[in-house]
Image 1 (cartoon, rainbow, N blue to C red):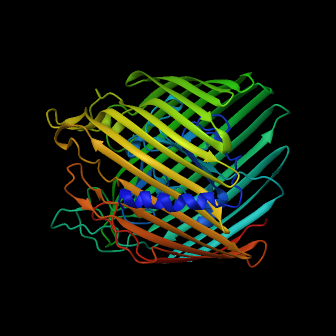
Image 2: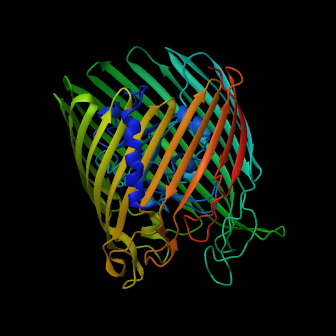
Image 3: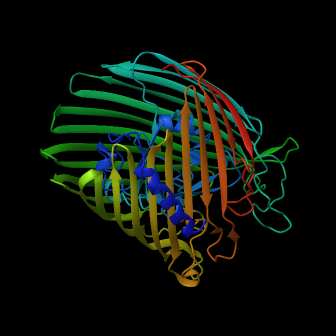
Length: 615
């Protein structure tokens, strides 16, 4: 897909917007952008919300499939469902994106990655995506943006639900749950299970030492079992208490050797409790405590009955936060807070240091002055390993008639080095500094009763990128990068069709040494996604077209992966108010492509599921 193709798609989309006939939701709420509730239309930063209805309608069977192709997002995947998936947001590295589950920071403190593939979509209520730096509110990692996953939240009468499904490559799925609530409290519990025989993940060769460095032409299976418990209660007119717990246990087969293993038992867990006190309309105070775990236990199975333990990397992250929100005057508010975080690792690899603390304090101002808006925030983080680091952000917006809005923002961000960067035996450098960035964004949008669209342009410059330094034979802060991009989104309804268009152009380039001017590895410059859905009485039909331009698999830009386009089709039949039959066909034209060199992607696949969900 070339830039001219994106321009052509935009030109096609605009007439559709002008002819739209049904209303969009102008009251959609987002909390991640400012750590306070605000409408999407009022946000000064590019945001997107994916609701539970959108998730069910998409029939996506993994979080990477659900997010793929959305504005600013690109994925690299190593072999299909359940395999390692790395997310690039606005061209930044995977470890430069902050991911939260119900307000709790998740991810590996050793590798710096989040196991997106192990977060079950059946447990998700909604997802909020904020594109651009948010370190001034969240601290480390929020360079490219923040993605927050909210687990299910139940209200109303007691409601049971379940879903069963089958699909290609012997996919089997089942989920069940209950939930309910009233004006005094709410509760819910859900269990989900998924298993597939998978595909041959890697085309590597032990002779050529390429790809995964081994030759294992077999199916690489995957299974996942998850449990989500949550509830909330009113402890009076001004006090609320809620708690969430999500645990996902996964088993993953991959192509590997006795040195790195070919099987992994993984655990993703996030737990939190939050107390809110609202003594008046102008004052709200919240306290939250949480814990997340990212555990990986790797083994080698010789397929002759012998399994050898290779190693384990377990991350335990404990967090606590306090925030106060204060209404200063009509349309003006101030928020101030503090975050504390402790990372601890357990591993059979000997690290010189296995734990560190971080304390951050921040303050944010939000104001409306007629048609103009202002947002300003500043934060300081004091880390046990690298000391203090300050970040800031400033956003401005002006509203015009008919829902038009002009926005501009600037922000700084940073990412603390991981435990692997700092302390991995013989390969770590404890003198590393945080990676730092500065970003600017300008955008225009329109949120109207009949449609919504956004157009954003941005530039990010990153300094002190960590990479291998041949002069000291260790990682060092020696690289720089410059990322520029444009994003365009449209959501509307035309002639009964729900239409969503998301197009992104990203130019992520190195500005260092021998790779100066090269594109950063594994990131396509152009990506796009078009979603079409329409209901015909009890029937619903939908399609998703996903496209990506070529990318390079290495920093030297010597290994080129071709662009691709895939088409997914879906069908629903609600044969009763509470029962729905769903059928899907993904990659219907059986396109062969790779997002990581040597690693296969699934060809044409089919799926069938039956869902019971009382209305």
